[in-house]
Image (cartoon, rainbow, N blue to C red; front, side, top):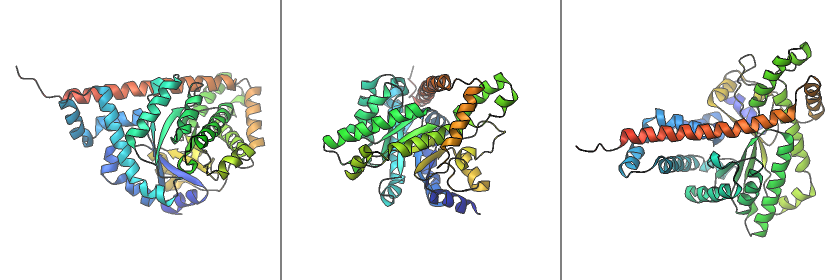
Length: 375
């Protein structure tokens, strides 16, 4: 099977392929458009680490950074304008995909300042601000699924804003995310918004769970524990998909669907394999299911195109097997609730660190480009 055929088969199996990377160089060079036409990529996600790397290593930002430096823009102002410009350009590149898929795909995600992860009102305010500034119908605003983020998700949706819910780790939190989604659409309908214009995904993080659980299994060290390595993440995602199927078979959803609502699709995030002992396409091929998104780094996309297989739906009907895996993890001493708490806390911290890295990078670029004062 050729690379194009492999990726096409994945798309035909119901998986929307999104790229977890965005830069102006990728846009300006035509690479992003090429991935759309040749690699079946139908969306893109971004984060501060990706933007920091892009700004530091690409000449494509030089002109804008120079103009920002000349007018004395702060690092915060510069970040906002640089990121907004990139996201607008990407939205325009994906506008054809957005139109041909009826608004299902062709989506570009932009996250709120991660420092607001525990501040509901500030998150809602910034989501509205970013939505207005980008001014593209195929934008999604990323809001973390923290306790404080849940009401912000509802409020943003109620205002007609499309939302990518990020940092979802546990099935319990995922159910809370879906409840927040339903409440948001119900309020959006009451507010007179066209529900068909509102899209949402719930980004369920995958590989980080195996990294954390495997580390704990190795500390336990028994044969039974070691045999469970590499199983937690896929089992967790499969349980999440079962929860998705259950929640979207309710009368509550049926009413919203009849009013034009689109389902909030599960999105598999963090799908790059971190353990070299595992197949490099593990978190794609083992999580194929209809109606999901898989946002993957480019090396995972290329690995899939080169030697990946598409064995069909690997998720539907696996809930009992997945639950057995979780039961066995508990039996050997894994405290899964603690694992999820740690991953959420570390996820927010990593996003904070990424934002600080982006600020430092942009401040450095502004300093380099600043007009030299004459003595």
